Amino acid sequence: MDNWWKKQEIVEQITDWAFSLNDRASNQRVLSLGQSPSWIVACLSMIRKIEGRAAGVTYVPFTGAFLKRDKNNCSERMEFNIRYSDLPKPDQINTYFNFLGLLEAQPQQILNSNDSIILAEMIKGGNGLTSFMNLWLNFLEEDEREKFKQYVETHIYDTAPSDNRDEILLEAGDTFKLERIPLNSRQAEIIEGITPLNIAEKSSSRLVPIYRLSARYEAEQLTLIPNLKNRKEIKVALHEEVQRTLQRHETYQRMLRH
Image 1 (cartoon, one colour):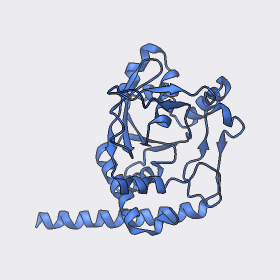
Image 2: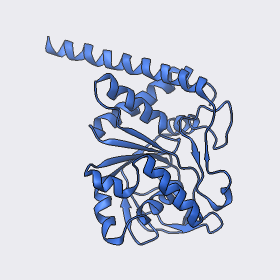
Image 3: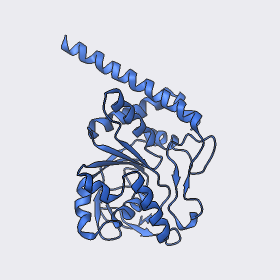
Image 4: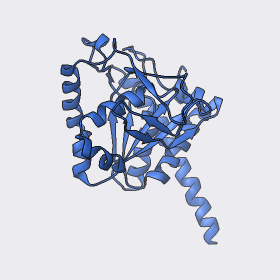
């Protein structure tokens, strides 16, 4: 979706999603998983800063999947099969785990903080999200997993709500509940359109680096993309819309008081 930040309908939709997330998250830290929800989360950070609060957001690079949805399963939860050709190698997993530590996004760090977090993501079939959740929980001992799940809420933009479920089954037998926001076809088109392709292009509007945790992408790992020009333009467009929305809200509140 070329130059989407110049289209008012799209900027307003992103801002609306961000204000809804702000209402739900209160002062909780929000982790944006991959590129898909990142501009919504960036918009949330603008709202919080304008209101004089800490941004409280973290962008967690994660691209691709090593699990595949079992579409033949008629269970009330979403179940997945391992794609062994994509299953990351132990050294890749260790490198990624150390990288999560720099973001203070290791499961044990979240447990030690004693603060719950919200994980924001977009799903179509849930392969990427479930791959990440499997990896995340595998960093914990079995007796810590249930406690950890109490610290993690999800905020899932669902582009195929009729096909998906409110619970995923992880490889170790753990289940994880999803808070899904069902999107209509136009909203799905928008959120997928603001997410650049997972390749390093100079024209990309990507906010989050690529981190492909897959055996087939061993040499790629973490890739930074030079896209500062687009990022600045996008941030300006979103910031202006956030300010307009806050001003409208303030005007409405003044009318109610009188």
